[in-house]
Image (cartoon, rainbow, N blue to C red; front, side, top):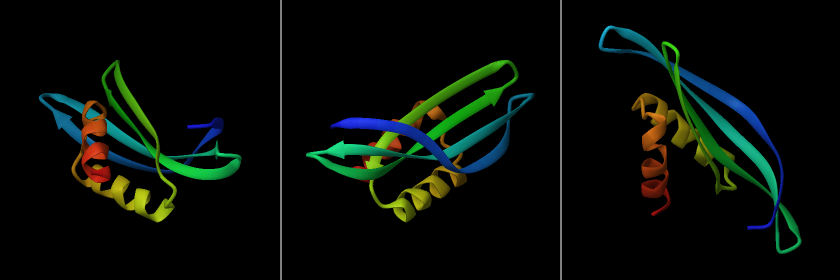
Length: 98
């Protein structure tokens, strides 16, 4: 891509679930950052996913999915509804882009 600037977390969604006998929380956040592509500044959006269960934290971030904020917010809502764990986030994004 090009030059990247700071990443912002704009919106968050949370979902509680039970894994065996342990409570867990999934948190999804909309990421945004300006990226310079061919001399032009473009705002792109991505998704962060965190799973916190006890003392364990699993985290994944996928940046620069698309420049359409509403499209990525909709995707993030679907991911939250499906309780997609961080380790499967890339699979969902790849299917979304394809």
